[in-house]
Amino acid sequence: MSSDTQDVKAEAVSSAGTAGRMTHREVVQALSGLMMGMFVTILASTVVSNALPRIIADLGGSQSVYTWIVTTELLAMTATVPLWGKMADLYSKKLLIQLSLGLFVAGSLIAGSAPNVELLIVSRVVQGIGAGGMTALATIVMAAMIPPRELGRYSGMFGAVFGVATIAGPLIGGLLVDTSWLGWRWCFFIGVPFSVAAILLLQRTLNLPTVRRKVSIDWLGAFLITAGVSTLLIWSTLAGDKYDWVSGTSAIFVAAGVVLLALAVWAESRATEPIIPLSIFRNRTVSLTVIASVLVGVAMFGGTVFLSQYFQVSLGKSPTVAGLMSLPMIFGLLVSSTVAGQLITKYGRWKRYLVAGAIVMTAGMLLLSTIDEHTSVLMLSIWMFVLGAGVGMLMQNLVLAAQNDVPANELGAATSTLTFFRSMGGAIGVSALGAVLAGKVTSLFAEKFPQAATGGTAAVPDLTTLPEQARVIVANIYAQATSELFMVAAPIAALAFVAVVFVKEKPLHTMSGDERRAQEEAGLPLH
Image (cartoon, rainbow, N blue to C red; front, side, top):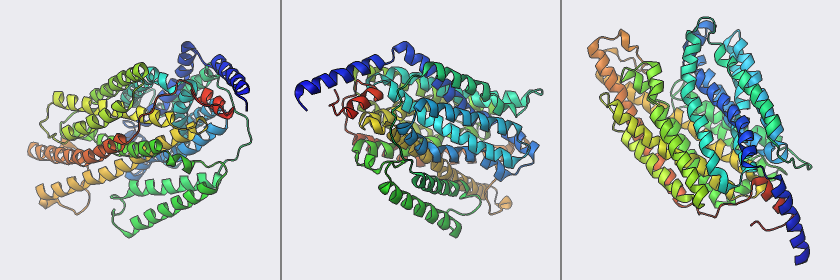
């Protein structure tokens, strides 16, 4: 191709890209629909927490059902994220995100009307599939609309949505359950009007070009990935409760999961359009950010999910107060992600925030490993703010680094791969660190109350029924166990620091994902 022809072609592509680029106002309007969708999917996972005891009692469920109502949504969401991400590279992102919200609405209506726990669990799977689509596609759509250099100014909005939904969920759930003319079923119904509004809003405000080409979905790879991941997540959810971590049952689960994932790798290496292109792992930035995302998921979710129990059992706080005590961590996340995003947009440098975030997150874990039953709320708030600030600098910027370093036609796969591994890390972290907590509690109960030792896992006690002397001992037991949990999580967080140190900083693109894709398909160099 002659230089004159290439220049004309470049000018045509550039003009088309500039004409199609959304203005700041159009971006904000489109993001409003995305943020509303994100709000209801995050809310769905937290609003049910305070309602579960009433749900289980009304539907006649058992303790194992209690666990599955929570974990089935997580399983479905984690396992389907890669499939949504791949479809985003092949089909209309707008249609897919509306489809994911539609599935979420269907799951919510079934859950709210469920006459028994079996149908409720099925509905949670449907909700999880929809939530997986929303989780993967929101970030992918942002990358398609907004150049990496400009993403920082908008990331704080999503941080705010995440924080508000996380905090508001348990409070709204408790209020609905305690309101006689509403009840727990409205914990599921409440998200329906918001989801429908998000679908309509996206129809009006989200305008992205659809690349029409012959496509091939790797259904075998999708099945094997989903089956392998689900097997390992089911194992990590039930291990330590239904059977020992080191047992024949554990070995069967792990072996089956590993074999299924090995077959998935084989299928992906031969697929025309693989769900997770193995070639993206040849990209050093993607590989390192995936490793860091897994470690952040394990440390963050595995460590913090048990803080509410510590607040209630060791510090004697009510469920509502325990929910409010998480505010400092959410505030730290919001402040750091917003400030880091603005600075990245202004100066174009991003690696320093990954490194600083990993250091600060590890420091937060170490500070929380010193807690006991006498730790003041002020000190806890400061330490939780530190932890939140570290996570805020890390999570979204890991995605930014990967998106900036892959071809535009792999944006969906790269983004969903990171989200997938972070979710999987979180699920395994909750199970593994939960086993550490349970083991420590059991051993301390056997030590402090030898006459009551049963050889099984100690149940969470009702402090209101205990005499004062026993209550003090139990408070100490849970404080010790929780502090040890953070001591175990701190080295995991430190490994995330090692991973991000080796990420190579590259200049951020000034073109959106769709503009980059047009350039790449025209065979033109990116500027």
